[in-house]
Structures are given as C-alpha cells and as structure tokens.
Image (cartoon, rainbow, N blue to C red):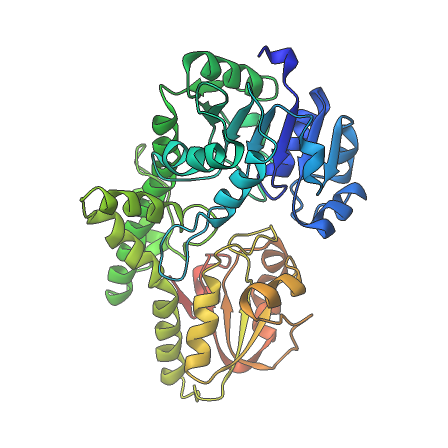
Length: 424
C-alpha cells in the first residue's frame, strides 16, 4: 500500500479521536466511526461537547464524514483505534473497549489492511491482546494478510497551545515497511514532526512511562506537602524558593486524576506483575496520590473543629469537579474522593462546576451539581479546581459564599496565601 492509497477510518470520536479525525479530514477522506448515535448526531450538527474541536474546525474538515454503521468502514483500508483504556474498580486494566473495537474492525478487515492503535496500553498489548482478536474475527494472518501500527495519543484536554498537530508523535509499525508508511501518514498532519520507534513494544512502553514519570514526581511533591504541613511551612513558598534553581522541576501538590496520569501506571504495574516483578516505587507513588482526597478532608475537619464548627451536618461547597481546570473532562476525577469522604462525615455537599455537563456527572458519579451556590450558605468551601471563573471571582466573592466563620481550603493555589485558611 502507498500513502496515496490509504482510505482512513478513525474508530472512537472522543477527546483523542475527534481532533485526529478533524485534522486528517482537512487533507484526505476520513470516516469517523463511533457507537454512540447521539455523539454522531451532535458532530454532524457541528457540536463537540468535549470542546476540543470548534464548530469552525469541524467545518474545515471538509473530507470528514461521521457514522455508526459498520458497513461504512468496509471501503476503508487503514483504521486508527482511539477508544478509552480505563482501569476497573480493582485498579486492573480494562481492555473491554479495546477488544470490542478490535472485534468491530475484524469484521471488515481485508488483505493488505493496516490497524493502528492509539489507546494507552502496556508493552506487548497490541500484538499479544489485540492482534489475536483481529485474526480470530477476520480469519486473516498477522503480518501476512494485515498489519498493525501503534502511535500513542498525547492529547492534553483543554490545552489550546499543545494540540494534536503541535505535539511530536511517536509512531511504529509491525514491519519496517509499515513503520515507514505509518510515520508518513502522521507526518501529513503533525507539523512538529514524528519519532519513529524501533518497534510497537517500544512505542507502547514510551507512552506508559511518560505519565508514570509525572505521577511519581507529583507523588514526591504531595509527600513533601504532607511533611511541610506538619511543620507549619507553606509548601508553595518552599517550591518557589527551590524553583529558583535552573533544574528544579515545577511540579505542584494536588489530586491526581484524569485519563492518563492516574491510570497509565497501573497498566505498567499490571504487566510487570504478570512477568514476575513487583514494582515498589511506582505503586508507592500511586498509593500516596490516591490517598490525597482523604487527606484533604481530614485537614478540613481539623480546621473546622478548631473553629468550633460542627462537622456532622455541615454544609460544604466543593468548587470544581472536572479532573483539571478549564475543560469539561470528568474522566477519573479524584475530586470525587473528596465528595465521598465528606459524605462519610455526614456533611451536606454541594458541587459547583460551570464547565461540566450535569447529565454526565450524574451518569458517571451519581452527583448532581448545583446551578449556582447561594451566598452565606456554607460552613466550609473547598476550591478544588482552578477554573478561570473561580480565579476571576477572587477571594472576597468566594468567601461571601460561606458563613462568617467558614473554612476556605484552596487546593490549587488560586488565591494568595493569606486569603485562605488552608492550602496543600
């Protein structure tokens, strides 16, 4: 197959798949496939609830079509799979979406076709877990009848500077010739270039350690915050001082959620344990980061007790539910841990977030956000996400939402140190 012969399909039109489909759709015919009919209807009407692609950008993708019909994929010969790879309740990789997507492609796979995976996985997953599904459903043989590639996604939700075209892309293929072709394909849209990995396993491993490294760095800073809080030292002040050295990394403490950093390390540790190695440092970092929600609530309860505020039955406002600022992404948000912990103390919790979809919050976490908080109504306020709307409010407006003696906990350093009662 030559580059000009590729007839492209993108499978899964979420935070990763849609920006990719829109960029390719400017250059060549692309079939965007998703199993969610409502999602397809919205995209056909030029609306993207993830806010990653604007109406104008969708209109500019003049060669992009949307469908839920598997038969529309039969005319394609190159499939890029961009479905989620979450973890289950026991912190184990959940490959269900990946397997189902592979089964779907297996039904339309033909001789000479290429299947490229972008979903985050552990090293070996593409060839050991996905390829057998493709072979079983299609009846074809890997690297004789069809081929695979792996090019891990590096989407940063809500980031308007680092977009799919301006983030260097790692590519790989199951043969040297396919690796070259996959690399050439992505170079059609990636303006900053690509890095062609030596193998699919190398590309898979590179992706999973990118976020494992960040997770461990944040775990270190979280642990430092716990230590400094016990010593009554302002963590942000310490980090600013240390940051005056040229090679000090600018990480900050906080909740670690989202579709990557809070998930990817478990894919690597799962594979490590499967081959007989028990990872110590990675899992220690995960345990610490996963415990931060409980720590935040424990600190809040202590502060309320010191102010002689009754915790049982207290009204608490949690400002922000998305996993990061200025985007509607709720995937694996750890603000939920704070809400759950507060309810264990029998607090009455209101969640306010101007960015999220109430329906999605209810569906994902059984949380119904309020439309707007009432002034003078709360015994405690937790500023959990640094949305620009909250920054624009300022300390006095946020304070006004609470009762005169309310505790204000600023998790994200949105306010000046003296404007809040607690900071991480």
